[in-house]
Image (tube, rainbow, N blue to C red; front, side, top):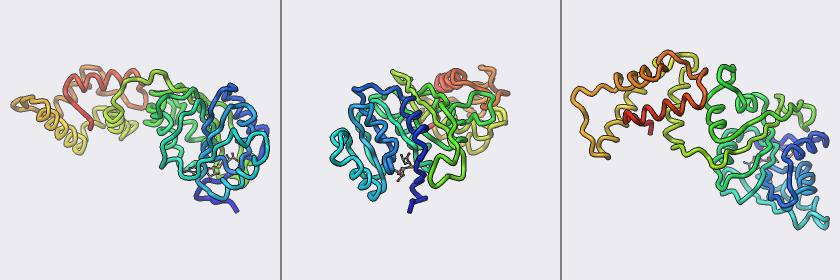
Length: 285
Ligand code: SAM
């Protein structure tokens, strides 16, 4: 009856649905984006508090069921259902996003939301517990990784509550948690491709030192090729005897990061590192 490929685990505990909606602190003027409304258990609670709900549902059968559920009722005109894959469409304007997310799109959906402009006020999202814990992990935590850093670069992220498997039908294999994401406004003026390119290298060997991660042959080749492209497009003469390894390790040494592990670095450390690489004309894309 439910499509596992679409992550269909219906929230059957009305207390949990109500808590999720309450955590969003909706205003009567809010437009809310809901991703994957399913049969509408969360949708109805959102409709009770918001001005308008735009719900994007991939499953035509469930979209029809939800249409029927509100038909002729007081909320019919407040609800717009978009049928299709949320990842394949431009998002409309919204103030708040609420979703019991299909877990297979957790990461791309999070970044689609974080890159959405204008920035929204907050998103209250249900995820698999491990994914949620990664989003909020701090330097030194065992789950701290590139996802934690990237998400926290753009938003304040907090854990709202844990939700056990039995609150869903059918129950998923893993426990779930709800997080609240409040984007920084204005967003930090970062070239994300450059930033993420650097983080990919820094976290490629999570528990190794930065010097070890950056020294890999493939990384050095990539950085050297980027350096040549940079010189060519900026009409900079390549110095005689230029050695990419020396240049990269020089930056790490200068900042005192050569023996530091990415798993212990915070966002300010990574910002300093990227600025120092750019000062040395080292680029990541
Ligand atoms: N919101 C409902 C609830 O809480 O009971 C259902 C949540 S269920 C975990 C996820 C929902 O997202 C399903 O209705 C599924 O069909 C829908 N879905 C899955 N992938 C989607 C996608 N790429 N775009 C939009 N909806 C999607």
